[in-house]
Amino acid sequence: QGQLVESGGGLVQPGGSLRLSCEGSGFTFSMYRMAWYRVAPGKERELVARITEGGGTTTYADSAKGRFTISRDDNKNTVYLQMNSLKPEDTAVYYCNADVTYTPINYWGQGTQVTVSS
Image (cartoon, rainbow, N blue to C red; front, side):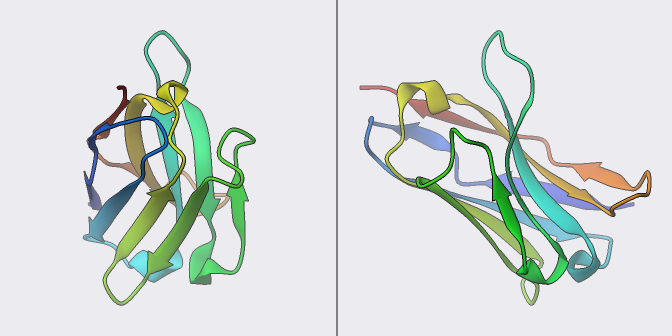
């Protein structure tokens, strides 16, 4: 059974930066598509960014384009989300996800809180 552990959340002022990390174990990390989702208070879960196996393709929510960057290091079984120019509306619990396209295989992390406030 695969496991994902996120880290790097916290409190940051508007305009600041954070880097989230998510380390996977118990599965062949390099074969999985990786993504970051978030759940803001009172809102639906939102896909923030996704990166394909091998890192060849990345996609972003419109709200993240130009500010967030997803990357992966398969040697460390880790996916990252670099978040710059943070806004109060980025406040949410951020979740890491691993899946295999067109299969029911799907793993979630426990979430890490990001709070953007002055």
